Image (tube, helix red, strand yellow):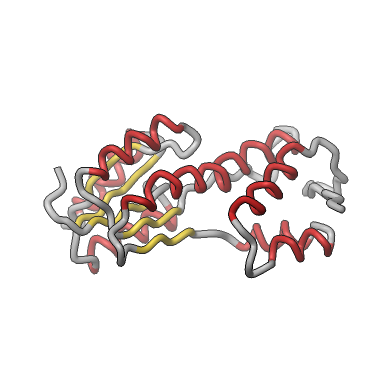
Length: 193
């Protein structure tokens, strides 16, 4: 059970950037830190590693591709009412992965965009008025954007884009089955208007 009314939650926190963010929050945040991971065993191992360093994170399982898992986390946080959410959980395929590109694109978008959106939809309403949400991204998204048509880039970069418009654009990309493949690394080219 959490012991403080201030809670920081980090998704995808069992390794890499998420683990480092969790460690730093445990050291500097004046509240409880909840480490989440898709894989319960790896998440608990990460908590044990931080505990061995004298830190006190809490663990909760979260699979961003599973609405029931997101709902279970939401219900858990309802008791504590969060202040900070760090969305770090992503999925990525290795360069040499033989999975067909359209499947890689679908799996990646499901977790990295739609999963993040689902977590925000469920958890942001629980935040206290001065709470914060942070979404971690990589340079890969910028490189992918450069491969889109100039018109599509302009749509994505509009400062006034509404969530519904963004979801519509992402759904269009997700449903697109045709693409141009360039060299070893495949890039989806989507002609949008």
